[in-house]
Image 1 (cartoon, one colour):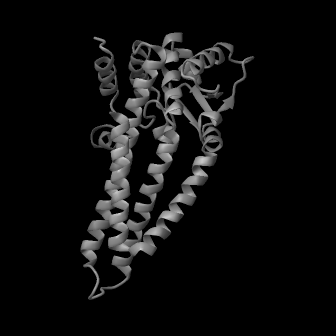
Image 2 (spheres, rainbow, N blue to C red):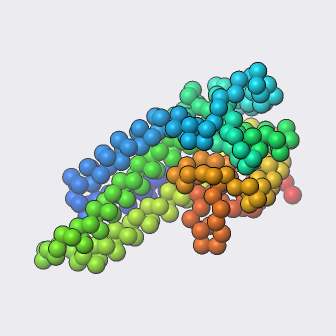
Image 3 (cartoon, helix red, strand yellow):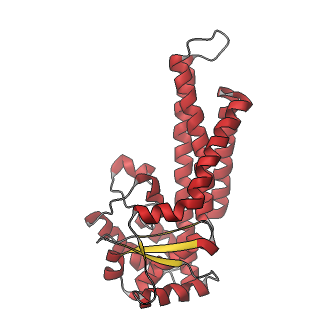
Length: 279
């Protein structure tokens, strides 16, 4: 169901891009925006593992430093029928984790020191299985595609606003106020759809983790602990990479939650219980 939802959302982004491009910049302008967005996101996709790991000062941990962690990742990767990813540790007391890399053969999982210190083996397995599920489902690629189309829409919207404000009024062109309104709506809609794709992938990764483990309880327990800990010890994270973590590292309540890249933890737990018949 979440895979179908992701496909529909990606289609919505594409339709929105084509419609906005045709209305505001014509075919040539739309293709230029798309080309720029593709170039930017190919670079981001290809080098994301190095960039993100460096951003969070993650260090690669060999078996000699973290034997139990390595053994657990190796066991789960075998269950998931994945190559063994590289293992990294992120300094800090916050409880969180993420996966990165351009595909299963070039993947890495990273966990914080706080996660290792505060999760029991079963809960840690739940977190790692979630990250391996992201790798198995190629969610980093899906996120890059969504970012490419949303980025192109954002560029078109910016050009439209700039043209409406500084380009003067063309008697044959659209009303500048209407143009600004359309551009603002398109940019907001692209952000909302991109956020919805991220949320759908989180639900699918949760379900995938439960399938890898054969039991949703370890992840449910881990999510409960993560939800409590993230409020007390948030991770100092960059907003552009917040979607990569197992729980949103950025604090925010009320209206901000509507635009979070992650579903509420209570909804994720409820979905796991309902999907696997757990009370």
